Image 1 (tube, rainbow, N blue to C red):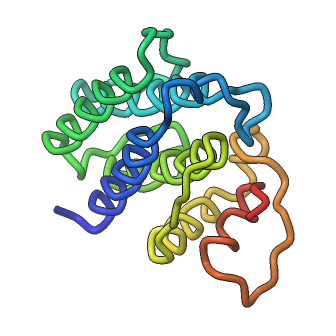
Image 2 (cartoon, rainbow, N blue to C red):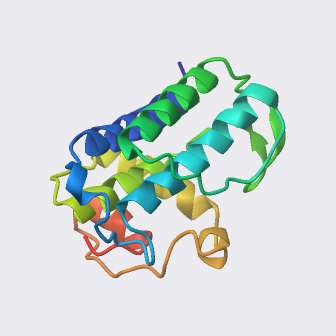
Image 3 (cartoon, rainbow, N blue to C red):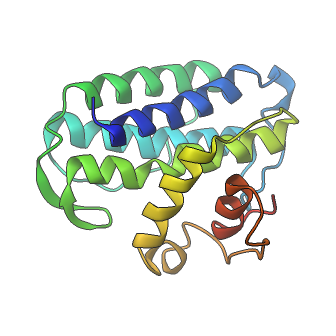
Length: 183
């Protein structure tokens, strides 16, 4: 398995660990993402990863859509998690196309998308009062990938304005600050 795919899978596993610890009565909690409660954040995450899985399976590029409300967020997430991990394992990582962020290999596209489960794992943990430790190596790799996209994430409102954090802050804080989260 490539290092990029491994990092993506670790980001998905981190999001998964947070979902597993969300109490049933916390799915309506507000999140750091404007206008999304915990269920809507999960539906967004499912929509992004379902779209990624569809591309991996068919090669047809389509933009993500908010997943329908399935009524049971944890079960909905489990289906998405299993689907995307299975699809990535069977994907042609060398396939070149114009994916959501421009022309690149599918492997690099997977690496670009990893910022979503990593960031939203933190968002969901904040929303539901669960502790989370973002691994420095994932934050460093993800920060480099998000920065490589230039102004696209902010222009498309995928991330908000950066929050200033000290240069000597932990890598997770520098990453979170860059994507507009207050660490």
